[in-house]
Length: 88
Length: 297
Image 1: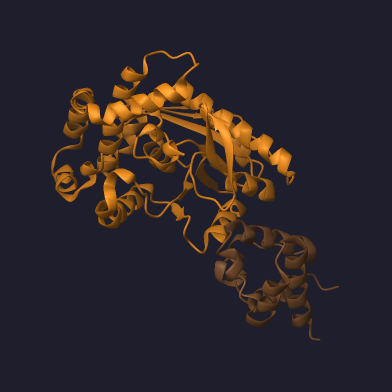
Image 2: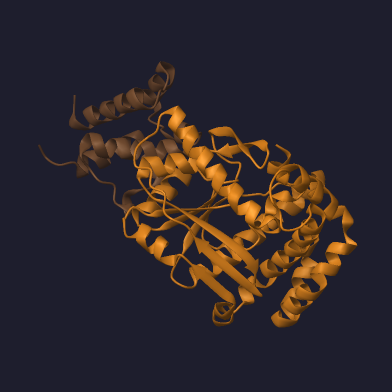
């Protein structure tokens, strides 16, 4: 599995663990990658997701990176995390 | 009071000198209140029920008249707001506790300014924005009102929403898909967000005793504070363009996510804050209006 795919799966795991999403919702997210289906229902979910990703990947979303289009798209989000996270 | 925002009045307000309009509003508002008992009566009834058992400076009937007069003056301020000169407003403004706001901003986490729906809010934020304290208001896109009826809500309310948008200037709407990102971005920039405690929009709603009734409170602002660590700074705005006061309170810091019980305790504190504001200045609270959704819950 590529790094990007690993990050994508890790983001889904974070959502599953912290944000009480159903198995059905997670499966749909795996397929379509659309986080906006959840963040549109609860705007604070977007805030919570950013903070969880920052903690898990030890990254920081600067104000210019806090963009609804980025945070609503699983693939773009995974690419952003891969780009900014510290190299281990 | 929706008639004042209709285009004939709005058009006229551009032609008449600002000072003349404000002078008219000041002198005609008490008369208008006496001529419109249909507006004052439901307010007085609601006040009687909600303020029972509390020490009041005047009877609900007298306060209801003051409320209607204050509503008219607020509407006039809205109409001429964009023509008000900051240097003139400065002579009419009193700000207390600005150092408390500055102290909260020094945390570097942004600030969530909490208020209730008071007549002077828009004017106060207009003034603060021009004096180095811009706040992004969180607002419902189209304010609904049972008094407007079906036709009014369909045609007038959206127009009123656009009218308010021009006055509020810096806002994010609850219907925006970008709401969460917008709020977090502003806080990350160490900016300010303005939220009314007595606003109804939030996925999570809770019933809390306030002003003798179980009322519905939205929990979103509190969750946002807990998640981001941004201090909550109370702000009360009183008066009108003829003389207004902005009072900031001590910052409230909630840096950990609360249990459901703790969350309710915190919300009760917020409801108590709102209640203390309303009891101190009943006629200044917008939500008495009989057409208001919150007043009916």
